[in-house]
Image 1 (tube, one colour):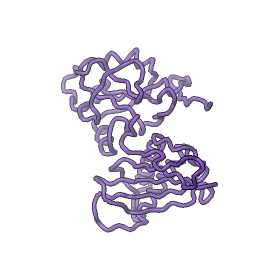
Image 2: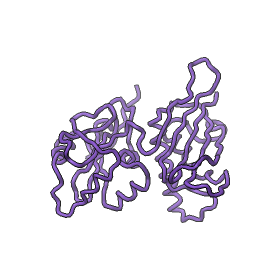
Image 3: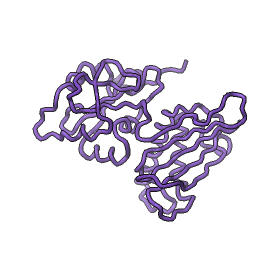
Image 4: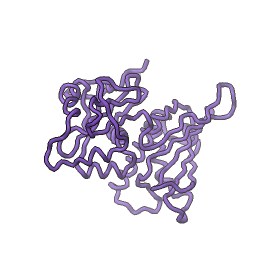
Length: 279
């Protein structure tokens, strides 16, 4: 059995499955909560980006929430129960508080128990209270088709997993003239998103794989097929970070990365097709 994922909180190591991410509204009131990990670690939200994606459906919504002053805090479930849970069952009394903060969260309903539900959500006792709680059991923000073409053992056709990253992420281009800091930030966001959605797709450990990266643009303007290459590299780094591949070394672990331009998608997105290759 692999060791439990743990984090350091308050000077001690705490299993991630005993922690929660709390979403705080600009006024200082708790606006939502999601587990950091399900008990079986089938769902692991060990980065702040993963937690944001549990509450909001795309990158632009996350950015707007951060600009409004919303922020996330990782804490033990013990602390959440003692200090935060009761505050989540009452209405915010701050004058001038941004009541729309919670209404803008995608999802909508909440009901809270002391234990996470199967989907990884702690829900609230008072359905009239206007803060939604979203968990990550449904591949938030992006979409993943886990082992969509997996065949029984013994059949020769390789398995393929399709992982769609959130719409609206800022892409990298070979033609960009970005400051290095902005370029690194975009690459990190793509990498984190690919890691989160790949984990939720439950793509198993693979000895080798090929990756087809399909960019679905927001409009029908002419684009070069190799334009998504820089974004594709960041996405493959995310697949490695998710533990699917040992490294992105070609051809030892990644036999090839192929980029294509697909059909349009609102606000644009990257879709990764990960195909198992025999060692």
